[in-house]
Image 1: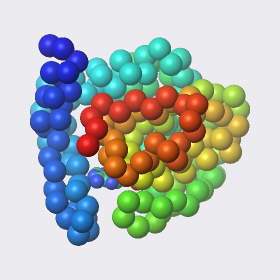
Image 2: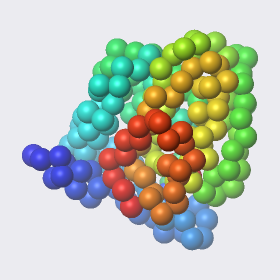
Image 3: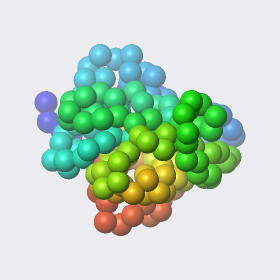
Length: 178
Ligand code: AMP
């Protein structure tokens, strides 16, 4: 199958839930994609293809849906996986960063020893909306002396302009655009 057909298949398995978790939000539910074996395989394959030549040292996955494919991408690339989690979840010493969401505000954290100075990092999440979460994760990575070389998302909500808040020199790979 062509890439176009693959992406159309993946898109067909993303369920739109209007007004969740708040009125006015079109929530992109990927549980329907995960439960379809073919969509799961194609999503993994195309996320991998996007970043395969980037030569990262680390994949940083954002809680929680960024963990679903992030660990698998790290394993396929032969590099480490580092979780960025919501405040209070990580047990060791952390760095924290506050950020704004499409709905509400929050704080994310990373373990202080999870990334080394000079590491080349790819940040992965299921969806790029306003870019607040990915930007905060970028600030954490940079505070540890590493560099974000690329971003990987399954879905990008183009109208929210999230990519404008990310460093212009970094590549942004999104499979599906709404
Ligand atoms: P943002 O920081 O605005 O780019 O929001 C991205 C984060 O919020 C991701 O971790 C997404 O999982 C979640 N998110 C934001 N908007 C949506 C949406 N419309 N559907 C599903 N998840 C969303």
